[in-house]
Amino acid sequence: MSFKFLCVGLVGSLLTSVAAAKASEQHPPLKTWKCTTSGGCVEQNTSVVLDKDSKYAQNSAGSRTTADYEAMGVSTSGDAVTLHHYVKSGSTLNPASPRIYLLGEDGKYVMMELLNKELSVDVDYSAVPCGENGAFYFSEMKADGGGSSGGAAAGQGYCDAQCQGYCCNEMDVLEANAKATAMTPHPCSGNNCDKSGCGYNPYASGNRNLWATGGSVDTNKPFTVVTQFVGSATLTQIKRRYVQNGREVDGGSISSCNDGSGGLAGMGQALGRGMVLAMSIWNDAAQQMSWLDAGNNGPCSISESTPANIQSQHPDTHVVFSNIRWGDIGSTTKG
Image 1 (cartoon, rainbow, N blue to C red):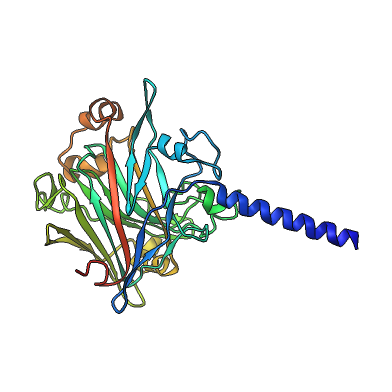
Image 2: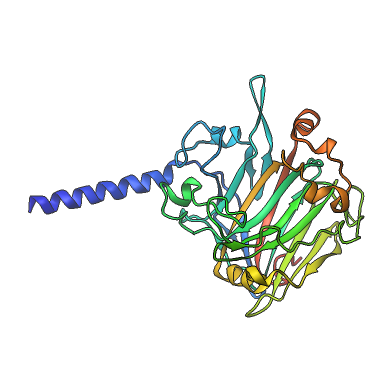
């Protein structure tokens, strides 16, 4: 009898410890909305969580404070999240380069099921220079973070099509700065991932004034990005449009992908199962982000796009994502 009581007591203690661990990190709140054509948009009780490997956070994953998020350049206000690449600490400018994920009120990652749905987000890329990448994308991570210590509430379980962490489907909705942008599916078939992806970059496609400072979509000012994943059973097309000052601009589409890695159909299956929203800001010491914004891909030069030049000339580089909505096609930008 006493052994039974002892076991019950231990289990109760463990459950209490787990609950306390889940609740111990101070996740910055971020309003988002889930939408339907019939019922409109319903506010979600969501927040953001830093990736477990966040170099300048002082506390360990699962027990981070507001100060840790500030040290990593992350702040939220209402429905907006701002990511700063560089954060001043005393006389030092730390290259924080944060990556965060959208977290639900249950302590698990929000699994957005987007096949035959759309996603909209307001963006401000005016302070993101050449060589920098303000990324807004999806990874087929596990909702609970994969069973690692602290789980999703501790930013565990990252994966992508470059096989960081492990190999998984990745849908890059936005990889962008003020000068160039690309949207890129990276489907995977097992561990065989399309690492290059089958992206659409308007500059590379000849539409060089679509996304530009002072362009058809003026990146000096905020605007809305709407991405539709079309296909009731199989993903057949990814469509993009922009809305700025009440004016809509066609942003192009993708209708085919590398079938050897699953293709659009495989990407659609992952979107149908549900994927995790990730947001980050980073630069590229190896290629200076030339694959995104230089040569045929954009107007930037290699010399201005080095991390050293960005830190020296653009220490305040940051991106703002806000008003995140997902749901039925045609439902996220009504009114």
